[in-house]
Image (cartoon, rainbow, N blue to C red; front, side):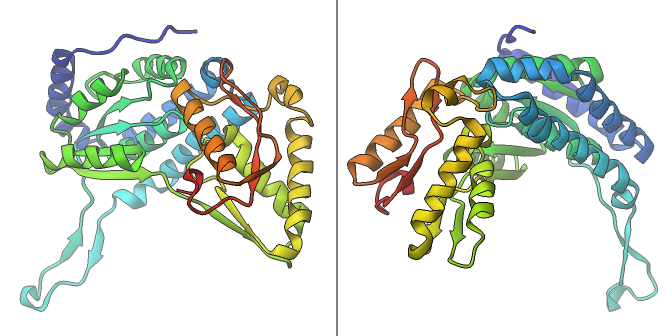
Length: 349
C-alpha cells in the first residue's frame, strides 16, 4: 500500500496551475474519441486496482469490500460508461431559432470546456466523489487538479498513484494535504471549482472562486427526512432505511437522517429496524464491532462530534432503544436509533 504523500508547496501549486493553464487550449481541441479513450482508461485502471482500493479504504475507515465495489468503484465506472455513451451527443451543437433581428442566419449553441478545474473531495466517499466529478471534467475537455480529503490518507495515496500512471501532470493530477493546501488551491485562478462538503466550507470556496469569477458546483450536506405511515410495509421500509442509513456507518450526505413515523405503527417500526440492524451487523455491540460489514467513523473529530450529538440528545430526553455504544480508540459508534428526540436537540439541527 502506498504511503500517504507529502503536501505540496505554494511554488509547486503555482507551477502546476500555470502548466495546466498553458495546456488547456490543447485539451479543449480533443475529439470525442480522444475523450472517450481517457474515460475508458480511467474505468479500466480503477477495476484493475480494485484490491488496492479495498486495502486503502480498509486502512482509512474499515470500509467493507462489498461497499467499496458498490458505492465507490461501480459508481465511477458507471459514470464513465454513461459519459462515453452520451459524449457524441453532448459535444454536438444544438440548433436553435434565430431572433427576428437576425433573420436569415443560422443559430446554434456550442458547448465549450471551462478550462482548468479544481475538484475538492470529501472523506466519506473518497474515490467516488473524487473520480466521479473527474469523469465530467474529462468528458467536457478540461484539465483538472484533484484534492482528495486528508482524512482518508491511504485512499488519497492510491488515487495519486492511479492518476499519475494514467495522465500527464499538465492535464490531470492529484495534490494532497490539509486545509492549508485546500486554501492555497482555491486561491489559484481556476476556471471552475467542484466542492463536496459542509455549507460552512462551501461559503469559503465560493468566496475564493468569486475573486477569479470562477464558476462553482457545490454539493453540500443537509437533512434527509423519511416518512413512514400506517399504510407502509414496515418490514420492507425498515430494511431499506436501515441499509441506506448504516451503509458506510451512516457517513452519507443523502442517507435517511430522521424518520417521521405514524404513532400507531411507531413501536412496530422500531422493532423491525432492530431486527434488520441485528441481521446486518450482529445482535450485540461486540458482534457489531467485530463485523466486517460495518465501517468506522473516518476521523477522530468526526467521532467526537457524533458522540457529543448522542450525549446531548439523551440529556435532552431522547430514548435509545437500539444501539448507543461507542468506543473512541476504534472510532466505533454502534448502529443507533433514537426516539422521542426533542426538535431543539443539536442532532436535529
